[in-house]
Length: 219
Image (cartoon, rainbow, N blue to C red):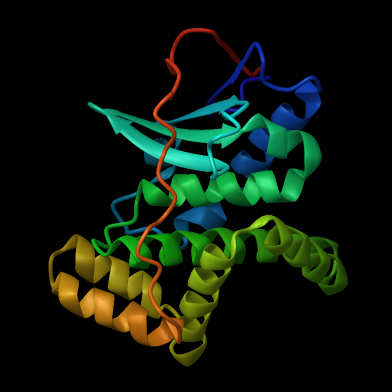
């Protein structure tokens, strides 16, 4: 079955290919929810141009996903080890990476907060199809794997959304159209954080693999 997403797994990826196929099927089911948070210029074809690569990250890599742009190619990379252990966390990390492709906030922490908020919001709505209790359990399990910094980013974004629904979507659109200064973006997120800004976000391990060779497409 062709899921329509450019998802490839390395030969050292995961033993159970079924989880990767489930990931592809869920992404297809969730594309409408993802687009609810994206600018109007973004459609499903745009989302699917993200090249998703699943492989075991180096032990020195602190993160479990990253988003890289090489020329005109956009890559969302996911740690295969997380997919083995915790499916819902892997799905949230993947959604976070995809959100980077349509996030226009120039403040680095603001961008991470937006991506956390979108990914958690999509997961929450998707999981609630199985009941609110199940959704709460899923969100708690994801947060346990998330770093303290990223938990604070999500809570900051959630505070802004609770005060004014769709505020973050509007903020992202304003940033896209350069209708807000970067310093104002930073100020908005800083006030919502209610804690000191984390100056050093996780940096990518230097040993990023070749992302086109050595991968098998999921069908």
